[in-house]
Image 1: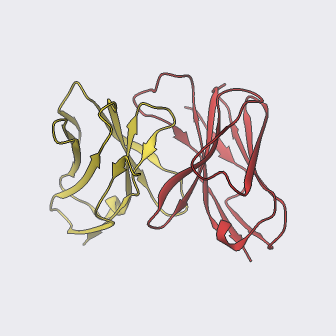
Image 2: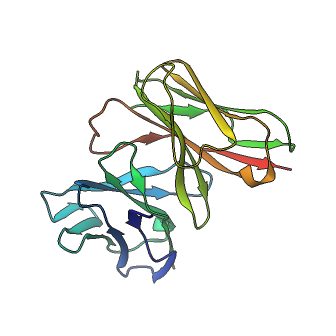
Image 3: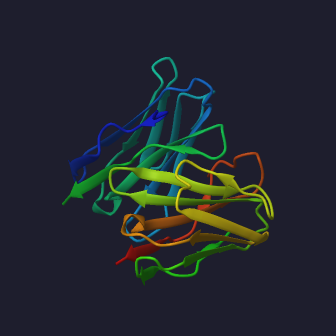
Length: 110
Length: 115
């Protein structure tokens, strides 16, 4: 039973446009959410997070939006760059260990 | 910065071999985790440990065991490697029970191929 779902396995976006990656969750006890980025042959690196007391968190080109009533969050990347091409994982807490989604592979086309 | 080091980036092992994957962190973190990453399946938790000599099963512990004799080191053991254990293995660590803003610190991963 997947508690964190990333329903789009892949996404292609043109360079300079907006990338929107989505994540849905089922457990209403989750109160902290993170996005990780992973390149091939490397470990995931932290990208951005959001607490359930907020509905938006921004860091440079990256913004995460949280809609608690819909149990949905999204990661916006504007403008998208070729270096953003990677697999993006959504994760939720509590508990520890984190609960991860299956990931979305983003391809940014020059 | 916390560093999580996985001893091998790439490994090729034969079916039936006993395989040891090593992970070391340098910041006195209590919690350590082993995941495997497979296309379309995401990150799946194999085992984790909250302290020395303590271990907990994750979602997919079958075929694996772990050892945590020292706080800084968490080893994943494949008792008898099989081809379906070909995967990217990721180690992570976490200081305490409270999750920091950035979550876990991950190692660079070990790409294991079982032939």
